[in-house]
Amino acid sequence: MNRGDRRSTHLRVSDQTKEVDAGVSSFCEGYPLNLFLSLHLEKAGLTRSKLHSFVTTFLHRSGTWLHRTTGQPVRHLSVCENPSSEKPGGGLNVHILIHVPFRLQKRFRALAQDWVEQAGGRYTSGVLKFRRVFFSDTPLVEDYLRHGLQGVLVYMMKGLDPAAPNSLGVERRPQGLIFGKRCGVSQSLQPSKRTWSPEKLERLRLARKVFGYDVLADAPLDNAVGSAGATASTPPHRRTRRERSGKPVQPEK
Image (cartoon, rainbow, N blue to C red):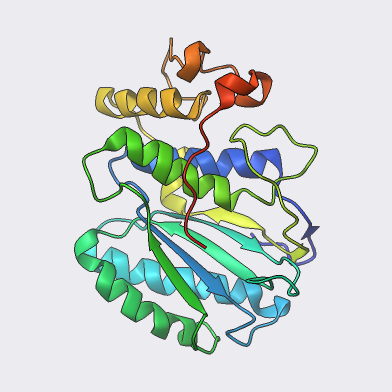
């Protein structure tokens, strides 16, 4: 349940773990998160008191349409931000990373304008921005993990607490005060929904190699090895600068 009286200025380590695990879990299930969208709520005429009702309704409408169209549960994760409006792109906004089959993405983008209105916002120029996740439409799985999924997650986690361990190598920037829930994942990507098969575990092994540490640490997978000769259980923030080198590509701004 969302607590409207909760206030936060940063993402916690537990938030980062939840979001990253959800993204990798979707990949392991065979439904890579492939569409990144940003909604600028101030441009939609919304204030912080309407933030969570808007996000809840927008995700419900989009998820219902996806479920009815594909027969699959919706898979997504989201992060709310409120950086200084004095900076370009600043102000109240939400980022959503979601799986939408490629054949449906054009229709999804068109319907998203209606969902903004149905959620209580005003659709106008600059409210919605879409980016297809890098390499998500190619067979280059490792490139998708490194430059696509990891790159978007690094961008979404930029509001991480400055005092928190930095497992992803995030370039941290203040993302303002949020009242209520700051981030979330769909029910389909919750830990209680995860099941494992040999094929899924092989995908996880590759993801751990790319991310360089034990993503989805509770999965029944042993002897996973991270990149640069480090074991997967060694968090990147404890490794040398050379071992951490090679920044993932981030979404276009």
